[in-house]
Length: 341
Ligand code: SF4
Image (cartoon, rainbow, N blue to C red):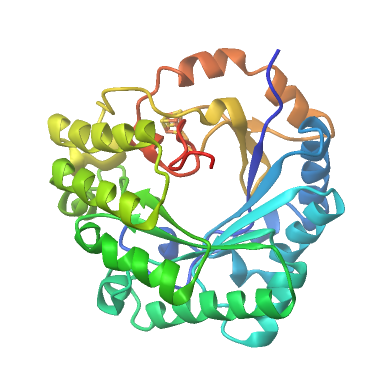
């Protein structure tokens, strides 16, 4: 008997207004929107998820930059609130540039809001996110959201999250100081660089991943331990070991240029997506992780989400043997970065 799913990741668009170096979603558009799930269909899936998670699950709004489609974005957040489900969202901050929008996010938006921020250093953030001024917008969004939360006496969580790579890990100590003591966000979450997302070309050569995956896992470990002590992060030793193993595996395999095509993955299996997550794409196909290498199941009628969750044990058995590089990702890793305090 499977335990209930904990997270429903639901796509609402696939375009973006930044040009992040680790992702090619900004090259896509939503020209096929007429074939996407409607708000009503998405609401039906959320209601079914509420039932099979016994009202204890969390919905994660996914894109692209999901806030570019505000009607769909707030529809998901509102429907989650109706079902008393958690609702998480990672945004780039560009759509939260005024007090009114920050207040709307606190009143009617997700229950936890994470803003992507790659560094305290403006130049590093703007370079890795591909658009000048994106650091200013991300920091402004965080400050506006935190101020709105204080004014409205809300308990919503406001986080920053970074993609950590060669360009920013050496200054993590200053970065933590900026996020926790200057901006005063609730947490800085770390997501380690994985192969580039979304290339169309099957022979894509992943120069960004090869050039920017952290080259010195020993130095990374020292820096993380230093930050752990200084900022009392309560980092999980098993996650720290997985982070080290991930970087050593990529270097040992010497296949970073192949990106997702590199057959050899991490030395150990570190993901548990299939035990807790359901990912539903724009067309209503469900998976147990984001990877297209595992089959998807079309949700055509009420009851299909539950059927998919309860009848996928053979798929789970295959996924348990998968060591792809996404295993370290924030959304699928088996170990949390921090221990419960
Ligand atoms: S490691 Fe494998 S099973 Fe886990 S998320 Fe990546 S592709 Fe899916």
